[in-house]
Length: 255
Image 1 (tube, rainbow, N blue to C red):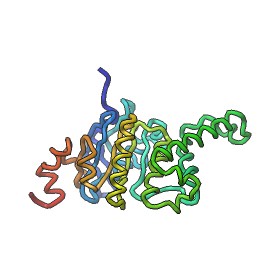
Image 2: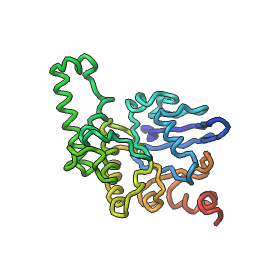
Image 3: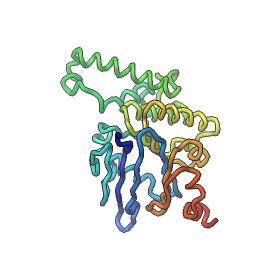
């Protein structure tokens, strides 16, 4: 029977000076699921994201993607291995169009190389056309195709969030890591986002997200883990986690 595990994190720790941001965090994400990391502010969620996307090197522990150890690899290697992410604070190329932003996401899958880009040979031109077509498809997929020629900075907040997801999808990820994708969205935008994430999962992409909107998390995710002060205090299905006394203590200070 094939291994259902996509990402395995084992005893990952990270400190900054005397501050322990993560302490022996372990979790396993299965192929095709939507998995959430939740916890109070400062719990270590984004630090863990930064470790598995290559921004930080773990001080100890390891993580594997489909059995391949990626601990301490650079972000470019993470992208090539199938991990893409968005950020809590939107990081688009503000003076580029929506279409151009998504096209940049195809860079890690480019085959032309420097020579092809300089001399613009036939293969390079063909790849450019294919890249633009795929980028337009992704803009349509996330619902903002009509804004293809608009500068990213002029898009609404919700559409900027969707654009960032489209750019991440352009890397052809196996794991899509989303850092607070619903932050700043109204109720209608959040419902629309939920539909988009369910569609992405149904198309075969595993999703890992950090999110503070508990209604979205509980109605969307298959499993979740709770971090508090850099430690995992609970993991399981939404209903089980929400009734865990340690989780109630972390969020509310009591039952």
